[in-house]
Image (cartoon, rainbow, N blue to C red):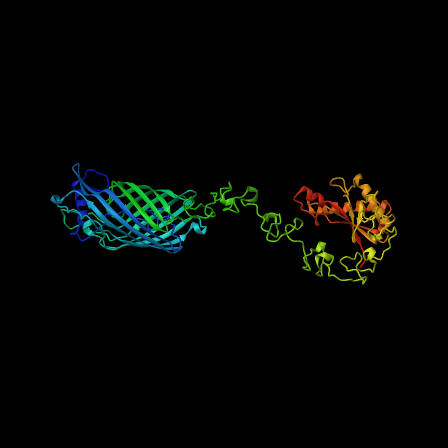
Length: 597
């Protein structure tokens, strides 16, 4: 009998039917039939042979050249003797696909029989097919309905191919008339592999049996074709396994082929591949086995889904860190997907970024609120505010709303009190005073040339270097225009608003100074904390500590109306809270002298 792959015995009626098929296909017949059953998937998205519902991305084009060998695609077995009508067939396939949009792809493929041969059966009345010639060209289009690239659950597409009757009929390579093949393709990626189903219907005109009673022609007509594919994804070397079967709708045998092979991405625009198969069934065109090798150019790099790694994730292929979340571009032991600086060696605690200080202020950019401006740790890396723009920060500017030079504490140089002493050196710029008292009008009770207001020991003569106190007495409090400076810190019981006994001597000095300076109208006791703990708790603790200090001073004889207590919590740091030394400096008590304007 005539078959695609198996060699079985046959009855005289079967022989007549199969010889009739040769007459259908031969040049003397009224009909034509193509022996070529292999059809490529020109876009090759997911599979080289079967549609998976996935189309090429918009604007991509793929060109393929395939060499294809078939062994025993058409043989005649009679009385245990096998006659090869077509024993060896070599075909070249040219295929192209172009995606006009993400949902519309057009394609074409042209098979050309390069060589075929079989047993000479002229003496049996069967002409041998010609050795080469054009086979049936196909044009087609595919419409994408669903796409996983758009976040859909699966890929789904419809297709339509048209076979043109342009092949060589005497070479078993041409259909007698044009035929159409509608297709339905469905597929889904599942992690590292893809599953897909394809169903198509080859619709062509049915041939009629011969009126010659001695030879019956076999029917040629429409058939259903089904395919299932499982393929790996996401790697340069990918594998696919195809099962393709045919169910004729006329009096023809069925067939199934099993095809498996690899495909390898040489570079982003070049792919090579190979497939081998075995055939099961007796349908003409189903070989005992076939081998296919080919190459493709153009848009051959498979697109990736969100969250997947790209096929380009190889050291010799161009890719971005975002495409390859599982790689480590900068070799810092932090994967690209977790690395905020994937092209720079960094550390884990900085999320893969290196230590940077763009403005050179000693504060890391990741912690610097003003990374391009030199700033202060107390202001999170930003410059201290300077409202009048005179280069003197507000906290150091005696005139924060009026511009003035730094050497006059940010105030314009002038003599407000008209005492001949410029305000920048006048300790009492709004009160007319004497030069020997640095512009202040106050008397110098102890005659040591230090005005009472700035004399830590106003009733005992001392030296300027010792802040107005005699050499034998070390003052623990010194005086400035608007504050009292403490030589040591006021100490408390840790985390409590309770004075430590070591601070009594210091506070007794504060009592002494206030009592010896009745001209001080009001002194504000301000307490500060570091930033450990919640802001509310820090604020409450600082207020309680300020009250504790004020209470002690009152108990020692300072009039209550000359004192006020204020807690600032962690809102006014003078150093960085990032270090233990800075936090220690920020935990402090300050005494501000409030003068009436």
